[in-house]
Amino acid sequence: MRTRNCSLMSAMGALVLAVAMVPSALAQCGLNKNYVKPAAWHPQLGSAQFMRAALFNDDDRDDRDGPSIVGMWHVTFTAHTMNGNPIPSNAYPMIDNALVVFHSDKTEIMESARPPQDGNFCLGVWERTGGRSYYVNHLPWLGNDTANAPGGIGNPTAGAQITERVTLGEDGNKYSGSFTLVAYNLDGSKAVTFTGVLAATRITTSTSFPSLF
Image 1 (cartoon, one colour):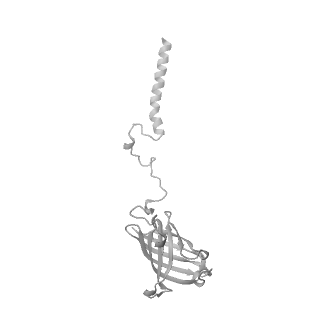
Image 2 (image 1 turned 90 degrees about the horizontal axis):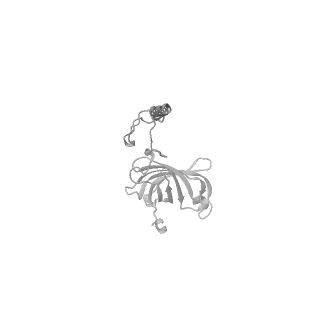
Image 3 (image 1 turned 120 degrees about the vertical axis):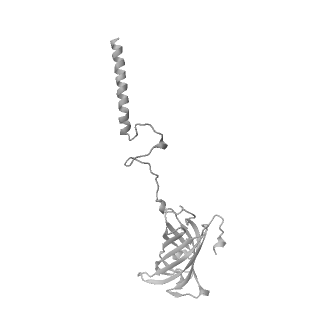
C-alpha cells in the first residue's frame, strides 16, 4: 500500500512540475503564456514581427498606380535643332527609327534601324519621375558614322548619349516627349548635338512589320 501511495505521489509531483514548467517554456519561445488566436496577436515593441518580403520598395515600383512603361515599343526620333541651330520645320529629319524594350529592373535596350556592322544595339537606364513621367539615360557605346559611308562601314566614333523626358499615355499604349542626342569623337569632344521630339507606340502580339515604316 505504501509503495502504491509513493508511486502515486511521485506521479502527481511530476505532473505539478511539468505544469509549472509550461509558462517558462512558452516565455522562452517568445510566446504569450495565455493562448490567443493568431488574428488577435499584437506584437509588442521589441518583439519579433512578421514583415512582407520584397525585392524592391513600393516607391520604386513602376506599376503601383496606372499603366507601366515596361514592355516593347516602336520609337521615332525627329530632330528640331542641330548644334543649337533650328532646323526648318519642313525639313525635320527622322534621325532614328528604333525598337526599344524597357525592363522592370530599370534597364533599357534599343535596336536602331541602321546597318548592324555600324552598331545598331545600345543600352540605357530609366527612372520614373512622376505619375506617368520618365527620364531615360541612353548610352550608345562606340560605333561608326553611317552618314559618311552609306551602305558600308562608316568612320569610327566614340558613341553618344541620348537623354529623354517622356510621358506615358493614359491608356499605356503610347508615349511621347523630348530628347537630346550628343555624339562624341574618339577624343571625347562633341561631334554633333541634336534636340527634338520622340513618339512611341507599344509593340503587341498583333503588331505587323509594315506598321514600323
